[in-house]
View 1: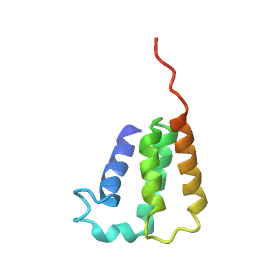
View 2: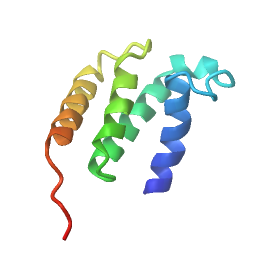
View 3: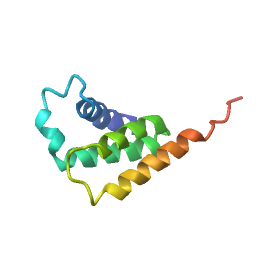
Length: 95
C-alpha cells in the first residue's frame, strides 16, 4: 500500500507543487486524471497510511488545480476538512 502511495504521490506532488519533475511533464497538470490521482493519493494517505499532513498536501494541490473540478469540489473540500480534523487529534503515546 505504501508503495502505491509513493509512486502516485511523489511524482504528482512534485509535479503539482513545481518540483524537479514539473518540467518534464508540464502538460499533464491540466488533465483530469492528474486531479483524480491527487484526490486518490490524499484519500489513501489519510485513510490507509494515517498521514493527515501528507493527505492535506494532496488535497490542497487538487483544490488549487486549474483543471475544472466542480463535480469533485465537495470531495476535495471534505478531504481537506477530514485531514485537518485528523491533524488536530493528538496521537496517543506508545508504551
